[in-house]
Image 1 (tube, rainbow, N blue to C red):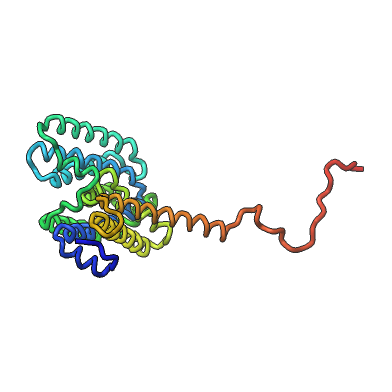
Image 2: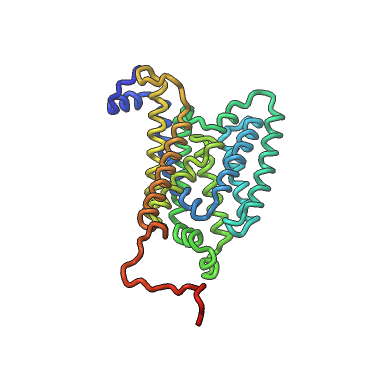
Amino acid sequence: MTFSWNVVTDLRLLWQIGFMRNAFEAGTITAVVAGIMGYLVVLRRSAFATHALGHGGFSGAAGAVLFGVTPVYGLLVATMGGGVGMALLGRRASNRDIEIGTILAFMLGLGLVFLSLYNGYATEAYSILFGEILGISQAGVVLTLEAAAVVLAVLALIHRPLLFSSLDPDVAEAKGLPMMALGLIFMLLLAVAISFAVQIIGVLLIFALMVTPAASAVRLSKRPLFAVAISVVIALLATWVGLFMSWACSVPGSGCNAPYPASFFIVSIAFGTYVVVRLLDWAFGRWTHPSSAEVPNPPGPVREVPDSTADPR
């Protein structure tokens, strides 16, 4: 198997490899869910919650390995439990830093206990730290699809009040929206999305799919529908190009000849996109709103300013 530098031919060859096909399918599903959920995460300023749930999920995976259960189920239990705790202990999503930090510390402590009690080497649990997208089976793809369908279906049912409460929580609360219930449902949906995203990108790099594309999207569009679409597109492109580059670097003929992990390329593409968007935003802002030092004097008669040191007589 060699790299031909013909994208169509290389993609056809890549699609014949079973584990790469599974990786693309699972990555596509996860990127769509992450792009949509990530927009709400950015609006609700819940990036720290995403980080905490991802690390808590590692503790759940370690516990699952200890009890001989598939790690993804431990991920789900830990992230959903952590999400419920964060939602119940803090009324506002943007003011939960103390509660999130407390729950994160407790969950990491549990993970340490689980790893210390396990006699073997918890390879499956440790692989969750950086993701293992190339190791996903066809059954894992089906499970990811089912979880994504549940998340998107629930999100479709509550998207209007959830978006309203995310954009303006004070007005939403004054209108009588059930803020606690909405926050609880959102955290549960986020927990499920994170549980499957960490298999793709890993706990330590969860921001790459769950936050970074949405952070770029909100700077490119102020309209929710367009911003969500942009976030999904960036997440998909990062995942697809990252997987392709990872495969290309592992086969002869590409000039790379190094087995770089797919998560590295996915993170790099997502981060590079965000940097480009920030630079364009900065450049466009300077062009449309120049500083006062660059604004020329307006035309018209010049008024003479009296000299404050002159004799008042």
